[in-house]
Length: 428
Image (cartoon, rainbow, N blue to C red; front, top):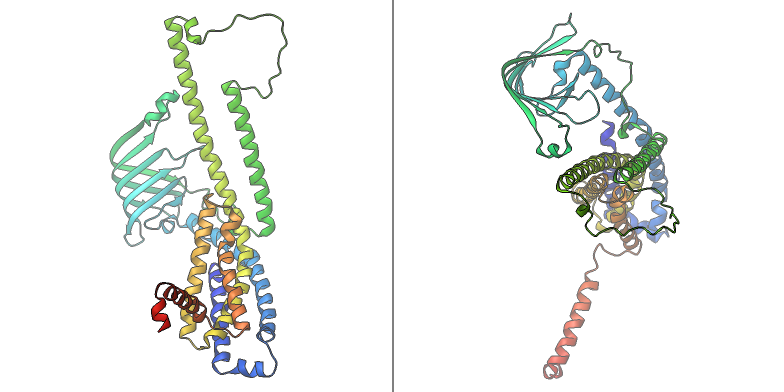
């Protein structure tokens, strides 16, 4: 439920402000206020103070309540998965059970222990990607409350295992081992996982579980780690290709014999073959190392962007309450309609625009397409001019759209064209 608050609160402020000020305008309350010398800004003053307090509460809620709720939810879900592994397997998605990631297309049986369409990724012992994949047509989970072993029986399947060759030039071929089986039993030891305390909270933190101070601390650590890895890799790759950090000129009066343009001409055919083979191996090794490091650096940059987006999002929620109020209140005064009809239409259209731009900006920012600051604040930057325009027009008692400002220049343009090309008709 706390996750829904950032979506519900701005929409509630927008709809309430449109309905309130639309009712006042529809019942000519604003006309009575203005005849008494009360301007729109003065009528909005009390609500502005309320919205300011509401924005502070929204920021406190996003900074404290939502991370705490996410933290509790993730730990509680993990504890349930540890005690009842069968409950942890949901259909159509990968589920973390012990040392395996399990995905099933369908669950059946009295306790949901009969599985259909099983895909299993075995977690690597060290760092790296999953290298063993098991696929089976059906399976069954067997467990006993007195035993800490979860037995997974698989029927009619295959297993695939990637092989990493020792030679770098063979890695581009992506070799793997494939085997078939009629029946295979996987025993998952849950002795450590079942030692669960409902009050134990050892779940690793993610960006949704951190407040502002924790996010800043984590961002500082992630940035330093990224910079250190870039420097370390640069020095390592320079040493591997023979580039020194600083080259000092060596003064010598000895005249050296100039080298030929083709250095391979100094060697015989066997030596040429060895040199070219060694150069090819070195180039392949360096390319593989660079591509692997690039992928790791992109993942770390994506993680930093996610934390930055989570940091800015806490402030965007507070500002969104202000923004929606200054859109809804003037809009209600202009359209002069209260109730649940037209105000809901305007509120839904404006909020869908805000939510779409906000979601799009965050997604692009997390992938590095733009800065996290710009991605998080894009929706506010786009709709702020609309809030300023509506407030200005409502203050000056102007309508939502001034059609005279559009039609008058067009009619004047047609009059000039007719006078220039049809002077006789204009004289008549």
